Length: 117
Image 1 (cartoon, one colour):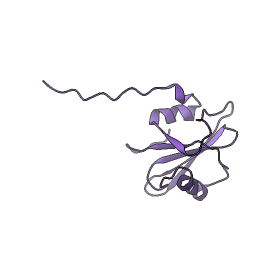
Image 2: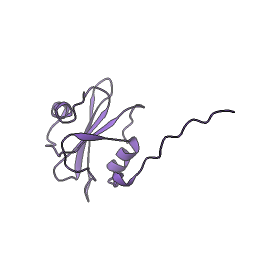
Image 3: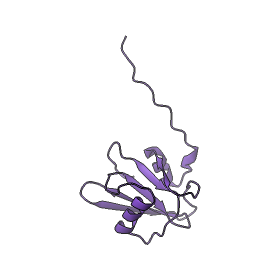
């Protein structure tokens, strides 16, 4: 699993891209497709056309990190192919990386902190 700082957002690009892109190409896609700053410290995830391979980039404060995974069987569960992207929770990202259908998970409503009487 990717160790991310608290508060890091996970952005998922919905459209498949050419995964021959490296650091610079993916950084340009972050700006053009997701309309985000690639150096913001957030994680940006892209998939290939076949759906069995993804790449993610992340600025850790000292440099750009590039992560990739290819499934030997099956495909990653991805949202419908629409322009732009969406945001995932860290738990949904963990499921996505494992090849599990992250869309079936429902995050519980945030609970209010208990108060002393």
